[in-house]
Length: 382
Ligand SMILES: Cc1cc2nc3c(=O)[nH]c(=O)nc-3n(C[C@H](O)[C@H](O)[C@H](O)COP(=O)(O)OP(=O)(O)OC[C@H]3O[C@@H](n4cnc5c(N)ncnc54)[C@H](O)[C@@H]3O)c2cc1C
Image (tube, rainbow, N blue to C red):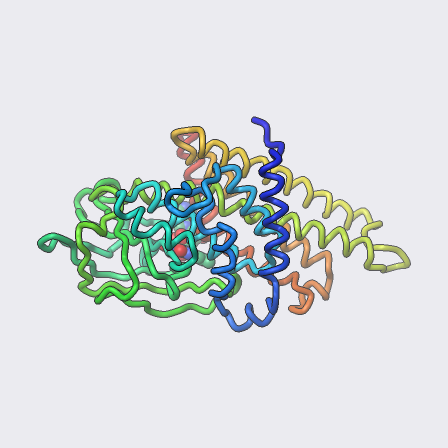
C-alpha cells in the first residue's frame, strides 16, 4: 500500500483547503453560540461536490475512490473550523447518500441522489431510540404490512440533521421474531409525509451548528417503493452506513488534529514564560511531539481503512479500529491543545475550546468506544 498522494489527490486536497478557508469560516463564534445550521454554506459545499464525493457522476456525484474521498474530507476538517458543519456533511454523505447509492433501486438512485449531491436535499440516518442506543437490536419502532405498503409507528432520537432533513433512512422492525438480522427493514422517509414529524431539537455540548433531534412516526404510510434494500435487509444497510462512517468520518478528524497541532506549535513558539518560549520546556515540547505521533498513527489507520473499504469484501474490523483510535486521539489532541494554551485555551474567543467540545461527541456517535472495543474483541474470538 502506497499512500503518497497522486497529482490529482494533491490538487483535491489543496483546492478543498482553499475553498474551506475562504468560504466556510466566517462568524463562527456567533454561529456556534446560536446553534445555527448554515444552509447557505451547505449549498456552497455542494457546488464543489462535497455531498456526493464517492457517488458516480451519472447520479450527480464526484466519482472519487474511497481513499480520495478520505483525503478531501481530511482537507475539509483541516480548512473548515466549523466542526458542526463538517460533521453534518459527513453524516449526510456517509449514512444517507452512500446507503441510497449502495442499496437503492435504480429508481431510488435516480429520484434522490442528484438532489442529495447538489445540495437541494439534506439527508439523515435514524436508528437510535430513547431505549436503544448501543443495543440497536432492542429497537421498538415497528412497520406493519398494510396493503401495498407499510405503516410505521415509533420514534428515533439524537438524529443528526434530523431537524432540517428532507430525507431520512429509517430503521424499523418488520418481523420481531427474526430480530435484527432478518427482522429489521430500512425505509426512505421524505419530510412532509403525513404522519412524519420532528420532535424535540436538542441543545448540546459541541457540534452546535449541526442540528440534532427526534423524529416521530405516527401511523406513517410508506409504499413498498420506500423500502431501501431488501425487506428484512436493514442490518445490511446499517452495516454499510457504519463501515463508511467509521472509516471516513474519522478522515475529517485527521484534518482537525493537524490544525490543532499547528496551532499548538505556533503558540508554544511565541508564548513566553520565565523568559523563554514555552516550547523550550521539555514537558510542553514532549506533549506536542506526542500529538504529532498520534496524528501520524491515526492517519495511517484511517487511510488503510479507507483503502480496504474499496478493496476488501469486509472492512468492519478496520473500520472499528480506525474509529476507536482516531476518535480517541482527536479527543486527546483537543484536550492537549486547550491545556497548552493555558487560561487562553479555556476562553471562547481563542477558538480552541470549541474543538474540545466538538471532539467529545466523536467517541459516542457511530458507536461508542466501548462498542468498537467489543467489535474488535469479537473478531479476536473473545
Ligand atoms: C453528536 C451525536 C450525533 C448522533 N447522531 C446520530 C444519528 O445521526 N443517528 C442515530 O441513529 N444516532 C445518532 N446518535 C446516537 C448515538 O449513536 C448513540 O448515542 C450511541 O450509539 C450510544 O447510545 P446511547 O446514547 O443510547 O448510550 P447507551 O447505549 O445507553 O450507552 C451508555 C454508556 O454505556 C456504555 N455501554 C452500553 N452498552 C455497553 C456494552 N455492551 N459494553 C460496554 N459498554 C456499554 C456505552 O459505551 C456508554 O458509555 C448521535 C449521538 C451523538 C452524541
